Image (cartoon, rainbow over all chains, first blue to last red; front, top):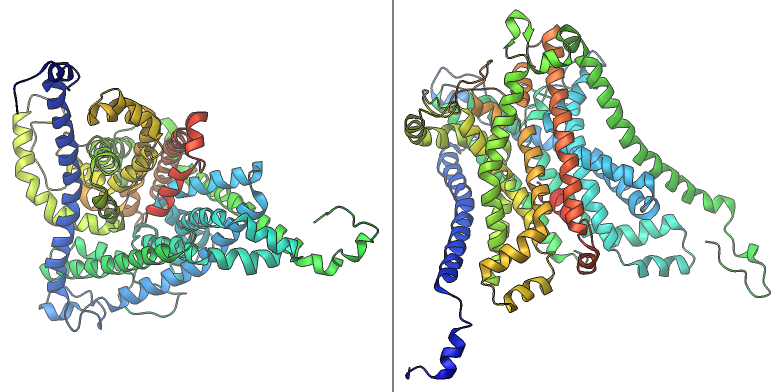
Length: 298
Length: 341
């Protein structure tokens, strides 16, 4: 550096003053700090899930039912077989209900309803559904299917509550993907004389399929982790059941029941079940991400 | 398809037979019916819920139910004030803690961070949304609450002169811990919406600010934040809706006390928690009162979410000039539904 020239002095008048520079640095560091704070819970949760959950995993953990026995030695409390199977069965049925209906409504919104008043009303109500607390869905199903029919809890009632929860996610994500299908594809098919239904089934839906799978998987992941709608629609039993007309156990309900136990072994089972549930949900998310990356539309 | 008539030909030759047109009609009206059914379903549920809640409202009136500070099922006395206030206190705490952190993370991801870090950072924050509620509850009650008890007691002792915050004995389940866990739970959605809205800020605005000599922070303050304000507020409101409706984590962490807690670090109750906790054994008026609590919760989330959607859509649409940059309009709403796993 040489001695300051007249040009340098003129430039210096445009330089950012130290006070403003200090403010900028402080603000940037604060924002970076807050971002790190946002990531701390994730690290802690994953760490604790792994360290506590892996300890609970053993050979019998996935192959035995919980016994409900909390007074004797560790081995007699059982594993979480019925909970895993119950979650898979109920979420499968919920998807079988929510996916066709959700995709149907999305197709209607994109192909027929468009921006008419009725379509806007449907969109508004779907958004309303997104915001409804999951426990209120449980209450809805309880009123209609438990009080309404005078019968008791059942797996399929839990599935219906979960499907209500999945529906808005499926509709909204499918709608976004369907909107991305190029208009040119539809118009070419129509110009070749294909009827509307054929255009939808053989052009629009196949093109949109990979993207819609992503939305469906995210909805499934959301439903799999829900406890509240199952508490008084499907719970609770400890036995493995393949009958969706009877009581059904599930991972979230099993964890919720175990959290309040005073016995350490039972709480450990809750950690093991939690690790299982989170692994399941993360896998679904991962698959969804991979598919959406390969999709040509999204 | 009503095309113009063919030159010199008979248009009827090209028309589809009525039988061939049938599947089109069936599909169109079938799908319309399906969409209409969703509307009908929601209205039907709402009416049934009101019907079930009526006995509780009849007993003490709607206002008497909502503003009576005593929830005592064994004495058949049902006042929902401790529940409503518990829900509001914990949700307000969640907003106060969660929103600044979420917005900062969004600013960092969109404006400050190296471009290579942007996607991993976004994915990591979104991972928080993949953890189920019951797992947050489990982690909160066995790890976070015991770890923070000492700090909470220290704060409570130092601030003993502030009403409702200090002075009392800190219990493991309490309002503050519940609010903290809720803050973590709403972080991903508030952050996702903020990021979505910030990405709609026209590059011209940012470049103009930088061109006038603004520092990065000044650019964020004068070009980015004012442009996104209503979108960020909308995202925060959606987070509030989540926090109000959150059930299982709150049930595990709030302590299930039937009266309004005497201080921030004491046990309380919330609308969602009372339903989850007591519904299994409830009969008669008690069950009806729980339906009423569910109804209050439903209406509360409806109001908050309605307002939130309106703000986000208004912000995403922006000024006419902005919509040229952002033709997709409701992109922020999409972020909500697809990321809220």
